[in-house]
Image (cartoon, rainbow, N blue to C red; front, side):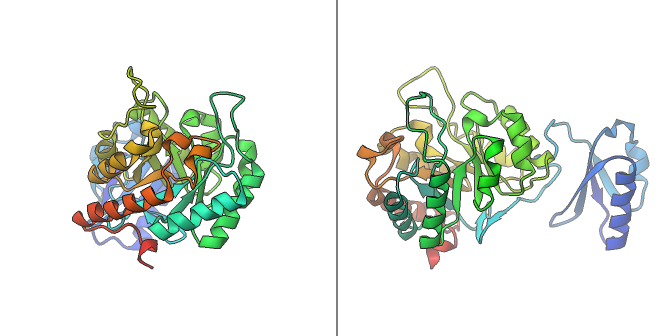
Length: 343
């Protein structure tokens, strides 16, 4: 249930109202919009009488949230959430955020070289996999903890915050110094992991599952938020369909729909969406045109020799060209490619 509070309330009056509902056993979520303060109630609100609540002078309106995802719902939180990652504001309508780097960390020379290249081109966040979920048990599984240390070295060398994938809750202590935790498509409905990661306190990028509906995606987001994490970024990365000419099928219609349903930032991963490098720039520009808050794209200094997903990785030169095109797309909507690329 959402309570739209009356204008002009004192802070003490709001706190008293919050305390009243918490004493009745409800969890509360207070947010301030451009026109009014919103108090969300989580719990069995069926026992609350809407007319009685509307009669209170401190409450302007009462709205029942029909969606099963409460905390993620835009009804619950009308204003956009901006996830601030060391000054990179993901979800800020003035900026388009680009996260770029190799699918997997392979060596110190490789990750630092790519980090410098993507920063030079204008990326604001460095991506790279230390732990890799692979379909085949014989494929490269990542460098593990050593890969995390190399990501930190690349961050020190470039100043870029880093994002990398968490595979299991028993790895959490290793991610204490990681800026954004990624939960991949294969783990989207690993609910125990979502609860543990949600309570860890780090910004989280959650990827849509390979065959998951939007409702299922948002319910997974709700797990993270119910565990206490308000800094969630949603990632559309393509879904499995009946066709096989690309790795997956990019569902661009998910971008505006998610932005209507939720207040959280929505980014697109064009690399995993198609799995073919020459298609990635077009899909990245399509994501910008669809209104996405950013992209997560794979860049490798030598894709032909990459240990993971080289066929969908851009070279630094192609990525630099994409960034020039994206700058023009963003400018049409009054946006820049994030603050870091202005330095």
